[in-house]
Structure formats: structure tokens, C-alpha cells
Image 1 (spheres, one colour):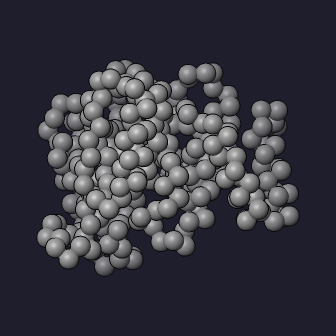
Image 2 (image 1 turned 120 degrees about the vertical axis):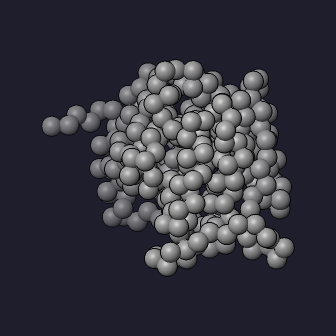
Image 3 (image 1 turned 180 degrees about the vertical axis):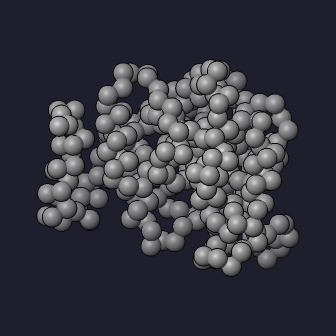
Length: 279
């Protein structure tokens, strides 16, 4: 089975990081391929462009390139009879990632879904508390399948495209309304409208590496949100290692947590703990 990662020609360190992450998994039966990312800001770029409907903000060149890159990968592999794992180049893998993905794809339940995400951004505190508690309650190696139509989420760092939907998805992604949105928001719209059946596996089989906090797409002003969201993603995946994010948590506390927020944090921590009993 193929995993394809999207990567700018200039992002050499990211390329090396994801290829090392893949090699370290030691997983046979999988091939990792690179898909050059689209860069519409290049003076010699002559490829397709997105059509903006005029509603909402105009996408940045980086957001447009991201959308076109994902669509190009799916279009390239449409018509094949095997699933495809699409990755952004800040995805993080572990030796268990492909074991979990393979196990699920070989189950009958996999046929019920068009897209199978292996990691998402959870942008609100309620969702974070719910998933944190769920992870604590699961037995080792247990897996939950969560319908993304029921979950506030963002991101498209890692997802499997089942072969039966690929051509139709590319067709939908050419709709002007969707072309006016960032790629993950367009996918989310299709999911919330129930045009796409999508789930996320939990605990997440994949996560994001340190480059995720140095987004090539989003404005630098949203880096605080990225830091919080990505740290949570690293806490609830199958390869979670407290030593890997402990320093980041300390940095978050020092930079963003005042006394009022700390008091609220104690309450939320108690709600997320295993000892909390709802009334």
C-alpha cells in the first residue's frame, strides 16, 4: 500500500524528518512516495488555480497551494483499487501506526467510510476533555472509530482515501464554493453535509512533529493556537511520550497561563481525571 506525502521542494528538513519517521517504523508492505507541493506564487507556475466565489476572505497563496496539492494527489491515484494514505510533511509515525491502519482497513467496518483520518485537530476544550478521558478509559491497544460528522475538528495532516470515493471527491473539490475555502474546511463541509462519510481512529495512529508549529500555510499570528492544538495531538496518539511534550507544556504555562486561567485549569483537570464521578 502507498503513503504519499506532500512536500515543497525547498522544505528539505521536513522531507528528511518524515522519511526518517517512516523508515523507523520498519513496516514492510508500505511504500512512501513524495508528491511535490504546488506553489502558486512561483513566477513560472502555470498549473490550475482556484476560483473564489467572492464570499469570505481570499485564500493566501500557501492555502491555495495546499488545496491544489491535496486534490492533485487524490486525482493522481483515483481509479486504483487500493486505499491511499495522504500525508502532509509534518506527520509523525510510529511502529504501531501501520499496524493499526492495516488492521482497520482489513476489517469490514472500513468499507463504511470514504475517508479515514488518523489524526485531527481538536480546536475546543470540550472536545479535548472528552477525548482525553476516552483515551484514559480505553484498554491497551483498544481502538475507537469516531464519526467526524459529530466532532468539531480541523486539519488534514493524515487520512486514508478509500478507492471508491476518490474520483467523486476530486469532482466535488472543483466546486467553486469549496475552492473558496482552505482545504481542510472544504473537506469538513463535505463531511458535515453528509456527502462524505469520514471517521477518525482513536487514539490517533499518527501525530505531528515539531514542524507543525512552524506552519507554512497559516499566518504566524495563529501560532499560539497551533502550539496548543498540536501539543494535545501529541498527548493522545498511540506513540504519546510525556517526555516529548513536557517541556512544551512548561513553555505554555509560562507564556499563557495567568492566575485566573490556572484556577480554571484545576477544575478542568479534575473533570478530565479518572476520579471524577458525574452526578
